[in-house]
Each structure stands twice: as C-alpha cells, then as structure tokens.
Length: 483
Image (cartoon, rainbow, N blue to C red):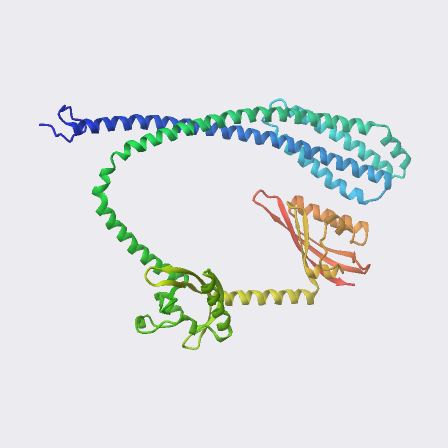
C-alpha cells in the first residue's frame, strides 16, 4: 500500500499528494525560467563590461594623443625660446620635454596596439616628431655657435611648421579613428544596458512568482519554531560572552545611570578598569563621576549636564583617579536614551587609553626633539613627488635658503637658486639619474638664498621605487656646510 504523503504517489484519492506534485513541478518550471534569466543577466553584463572596457580604451587613445601633441608643443616652444633669447633656462626644459615625448609616444603605441590599422600611424607620428625635434636641435646648435641670424632664418623657412602640421595631422587621424571607435562602443554599451535591464525585470518577475509559490509552504515554518527559539537563546548567550570578551580585549567597559533615581550600573570590565574588585558587585555603590580626576571634574560634569539637558550624545577624554591613587586616561562615550519603566537614562562606554596616551606623548616629544636637533644641526629635508608633480621643504630647509615660512617651492624656480649654470646642470643630471635609473645622489652645491647670501649646501637624494621598478618619489636632506 502506498503512502498518501508520498509526493510522487499516483493515488488519485490523495489530494495532498496531488497538491505537492503540482507545487513541485511549478517550482521546477519557475526555477528553470529564473535560471535562464540569470544567464541572460550574466551574459549581458559581460557584454556591457566588454563594451565599457573598449570605450575606456578609445578614451585612452584620445587622451594619449592630446598628451603627445602637448609635449611636442612644449619642446617646440622651448627651442624657439632659446633661439630668440639665448637663455639657457629653455635648454634645461628640453631634456625633460624629450623624455616626456618618448614616454607619451610609447604609451600611445601601447594603447593602440590592439587596433590593427593604427600602429602604422604611430610609426609615422614618431618619424615626423623626430624630424621636428631634429629641426629644433639644428636651430639650437646654430644659436649656440653664435649664428643667431642663421638660426632665425631657418626657423622662418617654415620647414619646422610643416613638420609640426604633419604631426598634428597624424594626431588628428588617430583621434578621429578613436572617436569613431568610441561612438561604436557607446552604441554597443547602450544596447547591452537595455538587454541587461530587460533581463533584470524578467528575472525579478520570475523571482516574485517563485516567492509566491514558496509562500504556500510557510506552514512548514511552524514546526521549526521551537528549534529556532532554542537556537536564538543559544546565540544570545554566545553574543553576551563574546561582548564580555571583546570588552576585556579592548579595555572597554559600559555603564548606565537612571537619571531620575541616580542608580548606576557598571559592567565587569569597567570595575576592572577603575581598579575595583568585581567581587564587590552588588555591594559597592557605583558612582563614576566621583572617580574623575580633580583637573577634569568640572569640565566632565558640565558635559554630562549639557548632554542630559539637550538629550544628545557626548564624547570626551579625561583622567580618572583610582582608589589606589593611580591615574588613568580614558575615552568617555555616551548618549541619552529611554529605559522602559524608569524614564531617561544616560549611559555609554569607557575605554582605558592610558598606554596609547603615554605612547603618543612619547612620540610627540621625540618628534619635537628631532625637529630641534635638525634646526641646531642646520639639516632640513625635502621631498619631490613625481606622480603629483610637487616639491615639499621642511621649515629648516626654508630657513637655510632664507625663504618665508609660507613659501611653496617649485622645481623650475628651485633650480634658479643654485649659484651657477654648471652646478645646476650637475644637480639636474643627478636628479634625472635618480628618476630614470633609481640611483641616489650626494652633492655639495653652492646656493644663492632668497636674500642673495652665497652658501654651500650638501644635498642628498634617495629615490622611492614602486612595484614596477619606477621612481615615484625622491626624498633627501639639505645640510648647511658653510656660508
């Protein structure tokens, strides 16, 4: 004889079995539909991500093109400036511009490598950029040799302009191709987004139908009720034990005071923090405010009064004086809240931060001592950040160079304080070597301060290298040797 509660029973008289069979097959069908929609969502998301990646790739090509033409213009401007003025400061920026152009072209070549028709354009671009730079180098060489008129005539010939126009034309073609690619990817991404939304809506509908069917089985939850209650009580016990352990580890105790009655309760950890035996719980009448150090008593009492009056949370740091005479530093957090049957209460946490306070005080004292030592020894530090293009000096460094405290240094203006061109060149080459080859340097360089005082300074630089082996920062020291 078959069991009437067998969900696969063929007994026509079993209404319950029929109901279960129907529920089973409907659930299975909806599950298949829901799974199909999930697959569509997943597939459309992949397509959308792919379109987004290609869109980003097109934007990188456009940005790389704009950066390249900008650096070429910088090189062109610097060379013209030297030909016109003969000022060597323009020569200093040519090497930096040349490196930037090389990096920009290499980056552009990298980002267009996946576009089959553009590597040839990059070769053409590099060729004409080289031609333009060779033209500029020729004019600079003529100017250096005293042939200023010949250099000017060569500039006026228009050959450099033709090279530059060709560079702009190639850049324009690369950008145009990238814009077309970007527009195509935008359209592709839009379609993928529409399909994704449609798939989400369909999956949600299937999911809601699935929930409706499952809701019909909610009566099964009743038999798990008592088991759930037992597990809940067990979890609460474990949570209470965990909270106690956490308080012990973090040296955090809790407290609560009923405002109307003044009755106060402490956690076991707070007894320990305040140096009172936990065996006195129920005997010792807690009163936290009596243990606040006399230096802080008035201020903390006022904070509590204001919090109670305004019904707002509060926070402060203060000292407490234990019954043993020991002094501790604590953080006090609290808030005002209602307690059923007792009215309002004030309560919160107290954390023992004595060791942190001592460590912080020692750290600040050490920092002050180090700053005084550097000032006495005439040693200041400096930092050059390659990624964010800024230089920072310590106050001692500014003092050595007789700069005002609010002065913000820049690399180009900094070079002007080196006393002569030869030493500027030596420092610039050492700086570039540290930047490109990760090599530290130690130089003695004459400086002219902001107040025109000639001094001799030892400059030490040490590059900081990232995981790719590239210098990102250069940190070093200034030391006054003689004045």
